[in-house]
Amino acid sequence: MPLVTGETVKQVLHDLYGYEVSAEDAQAIAHGAGAMLTLAGNLASLDLTGIEPPQGYAVMIAEATRLAKIKS
Image 1: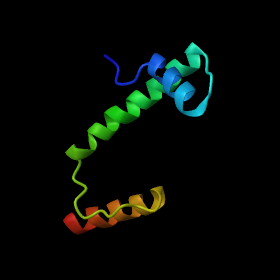
Image 2: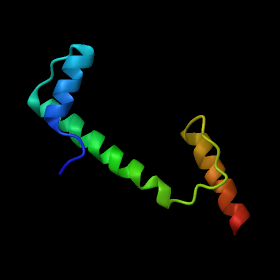
Image 3: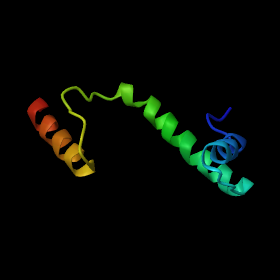
Image 4: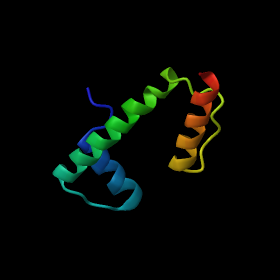
C-alpha cells in the first residue's frame, strides 16, 4: 500500500491551500512524496554519527568526505 495516495494529495491541497490539481498530477506528487518518505525511513540505517545538520548539500558532502578520511 502506498504511503501517500493521489486522493490524499488532492484532498490536502484542496483543504489547506485551495488548490485544485488533476488526478494525474496528484498521483505524480503522491509517487514523489512516497519515495521521499521511504528514503527518509532508511536514514537511520546510515552511519551519520558526527555529521551536524548541514546548511546545504555542499556542506553535507564536505563533512561526509572529512569524516570518511578520519575513519580510514
